[in-house]
Length: 391
Image (tube, rainbow, N blue to C red; front, side, top):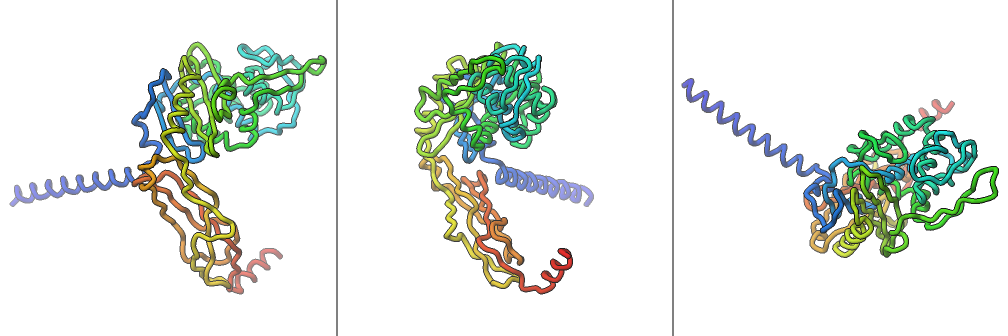
């Protein structure tokens, strides 16, 4: 009896563990982000040590090579420098150039110690001429010091989801703890390109900015990014080179209202390789409209509890497009998650739920649903309480 009981217990344990493992596997599979499923590289024949092509709207990875290995990124660092400066600073403010900035090593826009120049003009010098002196002047102005600004850069990277990235400085000169991945850099750039000022700066081919205060000449900038000049639809973003990082390039291009960003790290033929992988993705995928928002139409009506109306309309808060192959299109499903009934009072434009977008069993995106109208509560106690609090 003891032997039978022991065998029985062992069998039950094995069955239980197997079922638990299977359940855990299914849960992990269903919850995994679609981009993380693309860690298996889907590459073109390119020389880059690491590469990615990402859709700017959805952040879907369309092509990758060694996309999660940590590498130095040279002056593509300045993408984050510009982003933090635009979000944190006043572009019309004057920046006083320090000795440290004026005598910074590497590429330069020839700032003079003691001169004053607008933050916006420094950003053009940073992104178009890759000025290390501009990077230091920006960092000291916004963050108080290079280290203080680097803390802001790292906080922003974490906010965006670039968890394999660490910044030591705003310019990208080599440091053992200054690194990113091709995936992270594409993610940062996709985020930055949604900022209109950033997008305007990185697509600018020529710009004249102020010269030193005590001199009569201006700085004439010509963008070093050949993708702007030679690639169909090219509209950004940043070049980079150091001996340790090799040649690095972050490019963006738009065709038919569809924008892709590519990253190549440690890539000798960076112009050719970037053109190859961008063209490959533009040719292999189509950009489909998955969700449309129309301010005059509703997606669904939801029951209201305690309101002066029984139902309230909800609609998607934004449009959502997604690059797909023809075979993938039939695998897309949309699942609404809406709390019903909705509790009055309801304010127009506030969140009503979500539309979860799936490709197969993997969730690849979410669009918030919003209420289309105000609904007043039918409960008089609400108004009495509101009046007392207001008083």
